[in-house]
Length: 117
Image 1 (tube, rainbow, N blue to C red):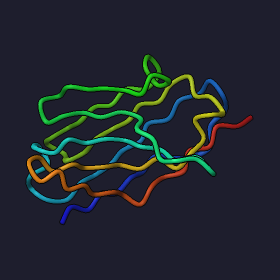
Image 2: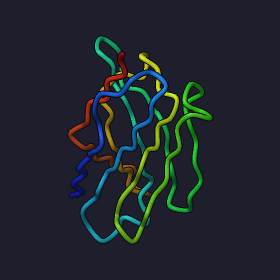
Image 3: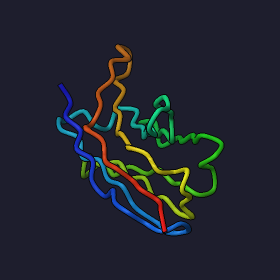
Image 4: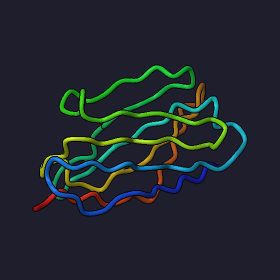
């Protein structure tokens, strides 16, 4: 069982920045593929960004150049730096851990990000 705890959400004006953090339990964090997803009201959950155990990253097209995912294996933590935020980035952001070989996935409870003036 992997527990994920997100933090860092909040209210920000358009064009502003936020940094989300996700702390994971357990001693096998280094082998997990970690991801950030988001879900806006009335919409399906979508991938924001993902980072593999080796540090390879991929992003949804609308986030490229604005969002950066990173991991700190010493702290069992994955981050999402979000810049140039837009109102359409408003959503609940979820941290995700995928276990290799089994592809079992775990989710955090989510953190609300609201972009509004």
